[in-house]
Length: 378
Image (cartoon, rainbow, N blue to C red; front, side, top):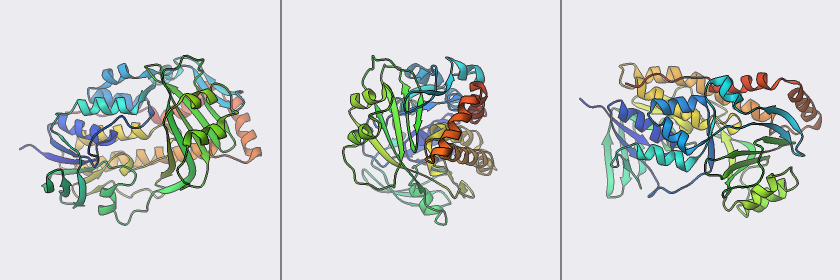
């Protein structure tokens, strides 16, 4: 008898979980709150672990075609002085595969296109979820009550599923950082890939395959400020940083803003009855290690590989919770050491340590979180 799954949320984590389950023989329905998909978001970096997961899902080649492999880069100060440099292809030599910069919309389009067209239901507002696999939602044609062998909560950092079934869980915590993201049009200027740090501030850039550049910026700031001209705010804060940062910001049309949050009190389980959480619904983390999407892909492949077993969800929790929470803690620590550091003495000490640390050693220390391979599907 074919097993059934309802996946709540059609982002990266939800679509990858749905695809993994579909390819493992499950009949899957994906419920998405928005009425229609559009090219939202900015860029992301797929590291070795995420790319291996996409290979397991059968999409690795398609994503590599839409992405751009890592180039030389490193870490700089706001005035452009290098703190650490990494040569071309160094990450690939360390892990056996390069990192790939890709637009989030391109990855979403590839995942969505790999699923049967009738799997995803848009305009679906969740009303109730129970641990025994019942989901009630308002669909395009009216209220629907569905029953499934598995319900996957993939509905993000403010997860409705988590709120309904994990009422004891603490809410995500704002970490006192405001971040901006943007994508330029095709860029023909000079570009040396880097993450640049100043006291309490950071700016990074990632080239995309079509010549555009994805950039991100972050500053220490209280959350919840009024919305406004976000590009002007980034320009005012980073306008005197080294080239080409001011020009990248000036060339960007839409700038997205987020007040960063994470779960500083991690969940004690990712599973309740027939319900499992994946991605940001389970372990929202800061972006400092670039592991958010990669951890979501790990969740998806592991869940699909074990869900059909009698102890499948217990095995999923056992395999995913310790690792994903360890990565989340490490990402939080990197943020405190890097972008969030403000004390001038501490900043000077950090910069000195970075200049004296052999780049390959520093790269291995950061890349160990990406050194992971997924189990086989089916």
